[in-house]
Length: 142
Image (tube, rainbow, N blue to C red):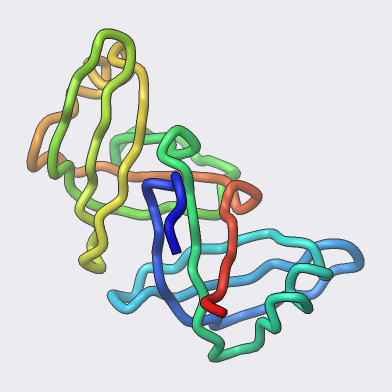
């Protein structure tokens, strides 16, 4: 499957919390990181998701927010993945940051150059990637 999403994570469904309209689906990646998605009940049925199912979580790089672990701020986002900055590629307006997650995966984030500078992002620096559960697209291999 080819997509424009920079972040494609394979995992197993480890929890499904059904709702009247939307379901909360938790995927656990091979390295232990967990990603929560909120998708419609119809999508859960259409994708035939069950505990133990293999699935993919897609997250576009601009949907990822980066923070320092010691920011002292609590966020309402369901997804909070800790890691280390792998690379920083600055552009005229935006900066691409690759993060090595603790579980071994790599995550890409596109943030403003101003934010990258304010956070002091550099290779080897600890960082936290956060994104909303509603920004996770779930897919399965047909």
